[in-house]
Length: 237
Ligand SMILES: [Zn+2]
Image (cartoon, rainbow, N blue to C red; front, side, top):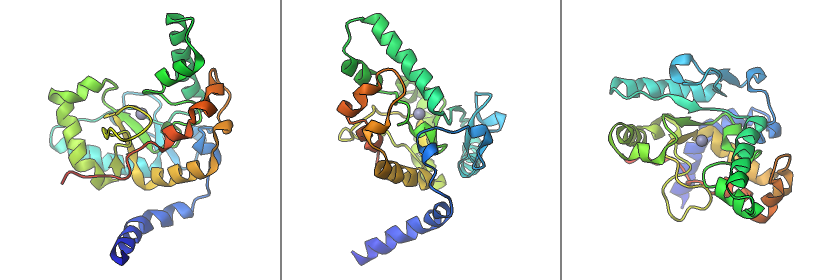
């Protein structure tokens, strides 16, 4: 038991030190920020992304550069296809899907509609993409990562990402609650684990509002979706 405590401390201290120096930015937790003007953020160099304006936290970019370089040496090319998204950007995604579902089925119940979208998309104010710690790589198609090039890329991440601080929060564990597995979504654990615990401590479903269907957040207990992540980085090595 004592050994376990020491181990946890040994792992957590380096990043605890760097994040406790930072103020808890509750606006950031909900995506209520302008990333281009935020001191902790930078724009991703163009070679790392398919987007023109992709922002992540500085620490995340530093580690991601190292990981991309290591992968490149083995002929594997990663591109960030989605990075930080503020509340407004997430609202656009959510409401586009909300309207689509209602167009397909005008009788759809709000609760059913929300749950359908929540298979892969977050409600505004609850997305890990708000934090600047999480990003999507190469493809948003689940099947892409099951064969050929995509499988090779995913296998590489499974083996190496943890040594750069990255992990797959929406893993394939059937006992995990919340979103479906997302092999493209990766997270910088030293920062995001801290944001997650702060988020859970501070946020109630009634804090989630300001978009179509927001009234379902309490019934769904939307915070469960935020909590429904893999526990920690795991390397298969
Ligand atoms: Zn994502």
